[in-house]
Image 1: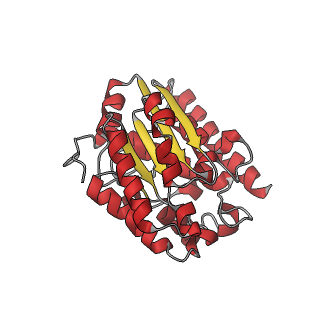
Image 2: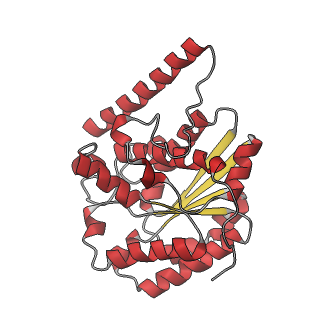
Length: 274
């Protein structure tokens, strides 16, 4: 209950602040941060160093959509932490909060975030529904969260890597930008026997495919190390899933990263499959 109240408090405070600024200026507030300052205008307990949010690889389709200023469609594909297990309601999942945060940052655009998370799935399950749940929606961006269940179940790393690589190629072949979502900093993942190999493999995929990765583990580690959000408030009692507070903050930071794509939208070095 404490976490829910805390998350609601942050949301109310940030909304009230934006409304107050709008009243003073006589118009809407568009708190899109400048490049290198992606943590501006975020709730104090969500903050991380700006360097942590600088994506190494651009998202050219997202950049074009932001430049056009009309529509932006995002599909969030993943397992339970995308579906929103641990959240108090569907409105508190990270995809739902991401849509709300993007609406706040980009009020002149029509923004849609589609939640395609299914609890318990691994990368091969998600690959089988790429056509139906991702490509058919014709999104501008796919945010793909995978690897946590595989690490916990000790699925062979080569199988995970092969499926993820093929999935990235398949989606990008349709002109859709891809961003990987790193794992959450949760005890059940941290204690998985080969979790470092999975984390390393996601980083390798990012480098070899020129695909950006959102460093969720590092972000949550920073919150806990700095005391901004302690572990018991960030992770549910099952020691795996996130809470309203951490879903809220992840979505807020992710929204700023996506908004920054307009400032770093050149084409990737290569889009060839490797």
